Length: 303
Ligand SMILES: Cc1cc2nc3c(=O)[nH]c(=O)nc-3n(C[C@H](O)[C@H](O)[C@H](O)COP(=O)(O)OP(=O)(O)OC[C@H]3O[C@@H](n4cnc5c(N)ncnc54)[C@H](O)[C@@H]3O)c2cc1C
Image 1 (spheres, rainbow, N blue to C red):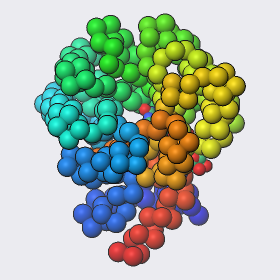
Image 2 (image 1 turned 180 degrees about the vertical axis):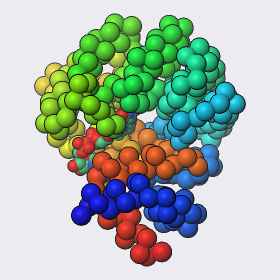
Image 3 (image 1 turned 120 degrees about the vertical axis):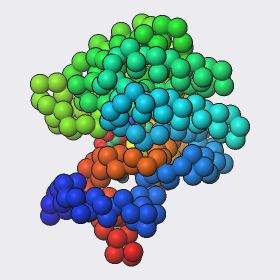
């Protein structure tokens, strides 16, 4: 039943149009998306910061098709970095390379990322490159390495569902990279990725154990209590400073867990997506957890 609702929501044009209406945006998506503007995202981050949680701005804008759109993203991220500085927010930024023209030309993407990372360096900030589907992985790593060669305020993401991730992590650690570890959000084929949750989880734990003692500040991105508990257990066993890494979670998800970790003295960063192109992000969150579909249906009924 739940699968049918999910399929209906993701494939039909009518609900897609309904979901993009402003009223429904307010009722439904505000749980997972901070708003459509920098002002709204900044306000959401102020609330998080007041609770002791740091943030990362994510301007939602996948699958751009022209150099002009990529340039607009560079300008948007420059504005965000200036806004973080002027509002005194405790936040960095996350972005996807397809937003910066990866599908158009790799060189264009390198130039665009260099501009953003250079701007972030001037404002004392850090840029995280999200990882997309495995079809973009090699190109994403190439662009990262090209920019990382001249700037150390840029980091990358590794997904534990991919077979190759341990080797990628070891290569990236060799050049001092800051890594966010997540399970992975895309539908990947059995040739490249573990399909069973138990295997993805076991690999997550193995990779976490490579990252934590590396002496580099990494992000452990998960809402999974089993992954969080194992990370804490391992850090204690290894007598690591609990501030030598941070937990990362998504806006609106596991909010109690975020606060509890802060109370226990851990660093917690929340990924704050905002922007008009919120639909693909929102659908990925629904696909991950059918219970969220019920949440939406309830909000739709309430109007
Ligand atoms: C900060 C951050 C950045 C990310 N960046 C990327 C990226 O760059 N590339 C990428 O591919 N993926 C990224 N992801 C997504 C990630 O790969 C997973 O798809 C997502 O986090 C779900 O996996 P999980 O570790 O939370 O555990 P899961 O195995 O999905 O879930 C375990 C438990 O977590 C809770 N939970 C998980 N998801 C939800 C939800 N949507 N709503 C409510 N509860 C939930 C539930 O209690 C669930 O039982 C990111 C995730 C985070 C937190």
